Length: 79
Image (cartoon, rainbow, N blue to C red; front, side):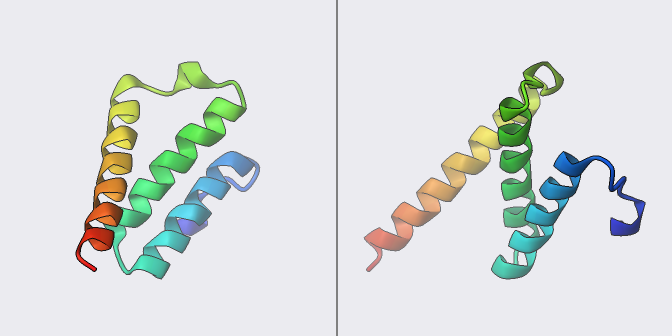
């Protein structure tokens, strides 16, 4: 729930915002979560907190990226 977020942790708030934004804009919970996971990893890498990111999270982000790229390619190919 949004009301349970700790507003002092701006990185987490930003990831939550990205997740909610893409969920609403794409009408897809899975897409919103995918963009949120990717944003989380990017933000933590920029902040130098790479040790806090687990290997399964990298794998999940990579799978989302592959899914997004393949979806875009299939859209272009179908036109």
